[in-house]
Image 1 (cartoon, helix red, strand yellow):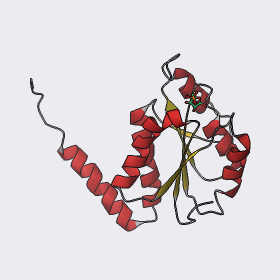
Image 2 (cartoon, protein in one colour; image 1 turned 120 degrees about the vertical axis):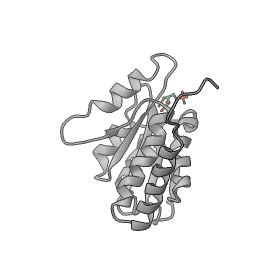
Image 3 (cartoon, helix red, strand yellow; image 1 turned 135 degrees about the vertical axis):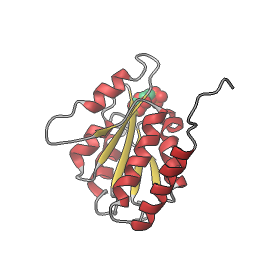
Length: 164
Ligand code: RP5
């Protein structure tokens, strides 16, 4: 399907999820982590979902970031199909502001965990960072890059508020 050395798979239910999920991709790029991005819908392309989950471990994926909105079944279904850790991103919806997505992803039954992020762009960016943290456990060079990224973020926060 793709390069077996790619450690992170970003999957999403629709093209319309990409502006949100790109926040995760941008974070992986910033930390020099290879990734693949695919549209894999639980409802519209269930066979694609099944194939992706079935082959994920053998292809060398180590973390899957799955984003979806509304009746957001993609992360949970992927977690049911593969033991690869799944990080779920609730995409913000117009109808219910993403609370529907959040609840759909969050309330997994015992036995099939999904690490659920915040709704929307911040959640997607944090999904990239969480994936980086998982991979850094066995990659000292990545760990150093992640430590540097975190230190730079901390250093960018002013001590005092300004009126500007
Ligand atoms: C979900 O339905 C997708 O994850 C997306 O967030 C939502 C709406 O999809 P589109 O109608 O924009 O394709 O499956």
